[in-house]
Image (tube, rainbow, N blue to C red; front, side):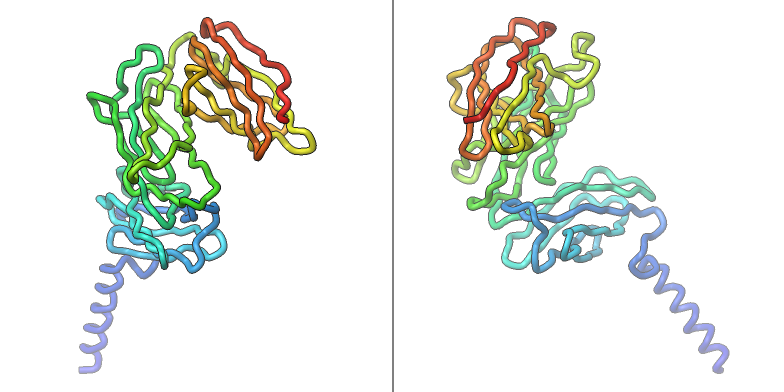
Length: 293
């Protein structure tokens, strides 16, 4: 009788381990999600830790780094982040494949949420670009196939925060485009207007795109972090795009389509302005040294 009971107990244990995926590890045919949860206002991980849930499983973020790793079944479409004192955030997942590890990057949370909308257009023809992927603060959406419009919901927002969120647009056949979100919130919505994407053509430079270049100088400070706001036309109230200088020598390169522009270079309380006219795509323009005062 003892021998029979032992067999029964062993079989039951094996069944339970198989059903739950062998404890905290992965399971056959599943995928592994990894990423980092951070606060939109500071860029730091939440403290107390956040809880990450997806596919019926959950884990907690690392207290120091905000990182997490979670095994989920194929077919999981969304990931939920909960942190004490903050609203719940739901992030859309890419299509998962078996035995795949997906790095979701930084997922931002904050005290409030806003919707971010806009339209993606072809920079050369001004026609809408459908099925482009727009990524911002961990949220992602695809543009409407007909009109090129998109809406990102549940985007983290902190009215007291100091960060200007940066997003990215991707579409096969186009050069990836980064954009800065520094427009005001009106009735819970940020409208980015039109975001142009440049098609990949033989006229594009073979290396990183850039037909306007120069060097930014910030006396007694590093030029890294200088923001270049691009206004087109020059009288525009809000920038069409913003670029961050990331070279310690202050060098920058911009890809500007034919037209007239006002470039505003900003770091802290210092700034400088340059007007530039671009006549064609192939003629390089060197703005020389630009010193922030």
